[in-house]
Length: 156
Image 1 (cartoon, rainbow, N blue to C red):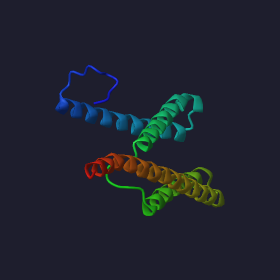
Image 2: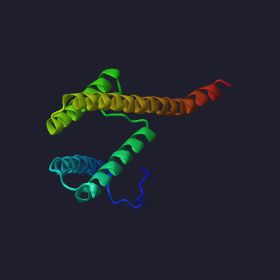
Image 3: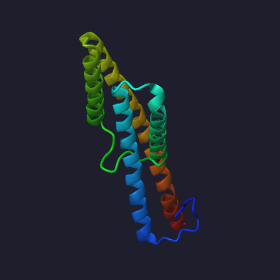
Image 4: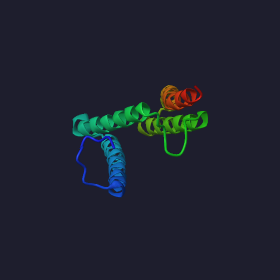
């Protein structure tokens, strides 16, 4: 196993358990930071008060995104689809539009922010889905080449 700690004292079962612990720890930190940042922002706290949490949240998000795309991974349970992208974009639009309306009581502004949020979220998801598909195709092609070369050599 390729790790930064070359002299691991863990057997395979312990290594799997350690990976599960790290997995849950990462997601606990991610969602915890998101909740803390949203709560502080909604309480009108000064930006300097929660800037560090927001920055760390962004670092975790970018790391998770970059690592997943590097290895051609999207999700454990599925692949990107138009329906899921639309659903996520609609949820973002509802949250953005609803919070804008609750704060300002101005429905044209809330509608505009909701539509803009929908388009932005949908566009970003489509962009990363296309990056995922390209990377997955490249990785699948690389994985298939050595097998096809061995089969070609055996016929000589």
